[in-house]
Length: 439
Image (cartoon, rainbow, N blue to C red; front, side):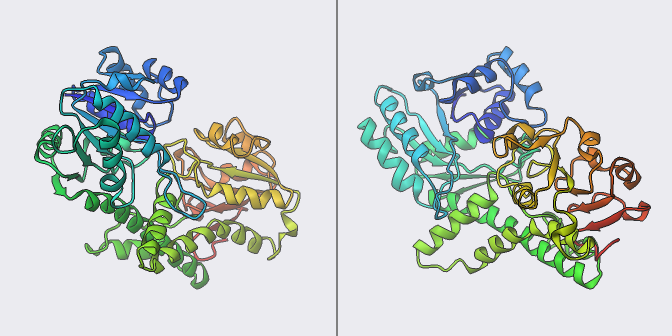
């Protein structure tokens, strides 16, 4: 099939690359010419494991091509809208990119004789596809949905850092449709995937995406609150999480305590669902608590450090501090809403000299903190520091505590992800979220 993708970011590019690897001819459209050129040169504009290698294969075979021109989507059987839906200041969803796409696509459809299917893959609040996208397509094309073109909502469930794997082995495919032609085409496209294909109304597909992300965020905030209680009680949160996860009704995934969730999806989606719920007369009390816990959780790292140095900030003021991990999770360069952001902000208020390092996220973090001192590697980041904060659990950070001790001026280690073996510590003052006051 000939497929179109508007937006060359995480969702659009990974989806296009995935379908192209299955033999479909995929056209990616993006307004950023630098991004387009990079894709055509088989260089991924984002870091995602395996994506560069896959791009080399599918760009050479011409199964994937990128451009800035909507006209290149002509004759595509299916066109996926994959643009961003950022949060407004009040948490509401910003649909400006979605609306622009719909207008441009409407003008293009006006000139076509085929039956193109427009599928929204961007995360949008319920009824957006039906009440916003569809009318714009009809108004700008002069054509009728269900008669001249199809409309659908196909949410994505890709995790950054394992997106290609998730694409190839999905838990489920959700298809929101209004007409049989769109339903048949989307079922055919996904027929080889070995998972359930759930067909639902458009608004239901939209809400499934929000409900899924918000529930996962809820699990994270819940276990983080339990981790903080474990610190007070002298217990190990990993033991608690394991005992919980053995219950099939709960499951073990997303019960890993840490400094809070971040990234491009969970914070944005939870806030959007909160705002949307309030607009519809439903008080989002659970989601408010989820965001409240997540807002405070990065401060847990600093609290552990201050307790270890006598309960006040004086022993950190002006000191050299290592921050390991800037991306919100390992195996990605995405620093949006990273727990490292509020930590760095607080350390700067204390006039700390920060030596920051991340294997992939430095360039993106520099956009937020251009004047920070960035280390070329982990060893340089630790050099002569008086405290080290492990924010992201990159594999290369999982070294013996003796390694940290040998590089630091004073071995105070705050391990927000519990990746170090506390039993191997020697002189280090070691604190870990949810480890019951390890020392």
